[in-house]
Image (cartoon, rainbow, N blue to C red; front, top):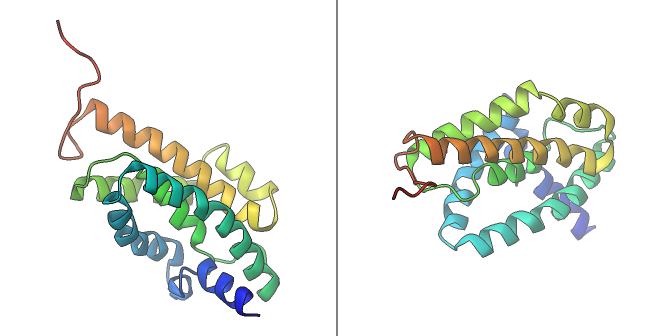
Length: 164
């Protein structure tokens, strides 16, 4: 009972998902402080926590689905939490990173280009709730790394090519 209650809280990111308008967007916004804190710990802890949140999110989403009897309720936002953290992996701590990363992830999550849409429609259960956002996060991370290495839009630019 206590474990189930905790999983339900995790699924809604401690009730953030119960926000009446655009809970996925609000859930992503609510993840920004977590991203900031995890970014302070270094890449190993950041990746470990993000990695562990995936199976926890699968269990939490499944518990919430069982609780309300509906697949992929908008109230479940742990998938947005994990997807956004993946999008923001290895990025500088700048306001530009947050804004662009937020927009990239939300567009991918809302528009659901292939293969995200197919995963969203075909995979059921807690895994199905999580997997489309994880793929959106991976695609978002690739986009953000390209922006980071090829532009100065994130407030800094790294050089991936060395000159002679």
